[in-house]
Length: 428
Ligand code: FHN
Image (cartoon, rainbow, N blue to C red; front, top):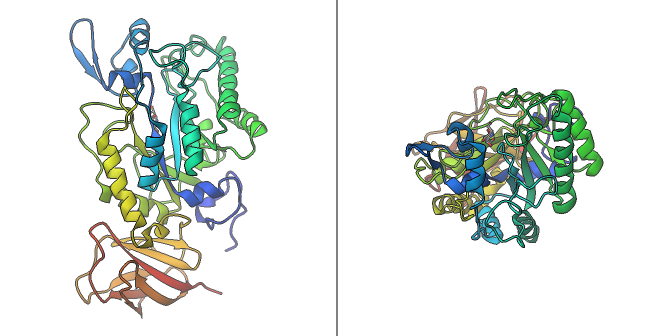
């Protein structure tokens, strides 16, 4: 069947990753770093109430722990991320194989992480931080120097701005929001805006509509037509933004017919929490990435810097190990520039991505010696060669039933996954 036309709202999921449009770099890069960093980070996941009881949460701590505005503002005034090291953060992303970064510029608490002129609730005017520093500018310089794209997360829902809650004054909030977004686009030239907080919520009531999202998207593309915007700019539908945003999951099928990006935490929370323990292993990170890329998706994996601005060492170590696997034996070819292939069914033993005329079968369940891996074909094609990356090990390909049997001649190349590169002759 002819490939659908490209452009927002069409079924990109089966598009060749090389279709040229503003999302081309994003689909090639596949793997990004999410950074949740804000005034909530200063509490490091724990708040002791005046009565001595302790309440725990991360970026939602103000709301979940019912911290009064004045108390939250008081703690924010002590926020001093003096150890925020943009070069170290970008290095951690590169070591992980993450090729773009999305950092929270403003989360639901409304606190801006740049010197906005729209209010004084920001890192420049309301903190103990050096007023001569601008962490978004530092991150932009470091990302540019390293060839990493930089995007900003921006929450539409705002717990702090008094004009947000009342429909009569919401236009004043919206005006400030547009002005803040123009500051971000004009002063930092982000490649991507990652909206959030668009859903129907209360306290404060959120009246944001799909129409608001469409108007905002038009405004942003008048500022920069190349700006990529996620679907939470509207109400997360196919017509909203450039890509879908499943969260903490890998969807089985393409997300409502769009490009999509699965975002996940590396441990239990988005923002830093000192007591977090459940960390994803490097193997889980790699296997998630291989699975997601084989379905035509991107993977946005989060780090939450502590109150001093440092990325937790357990995050850095796990990401570095995942990146080491991707760089070994050219196995990153199963991810970068790779995508969904309609040629085969998803196998039980791993994932299969397409990159040009090669299929990359990432095997996470290696067969016993001499036993075949079965690959079910959805279209008629031939396999002209098959080889295990990194070992040069040949793989015997035998037409079998509804597809092929792939029989490796030796052992797997490693515990995480071994990649078999299959050169195919696609259907005429
Ligand atoms: O409420 C936020 C949450 O704090 C976090 O930012 C995630 C990241 O995708 N988005 C919202 C929950 O869906």
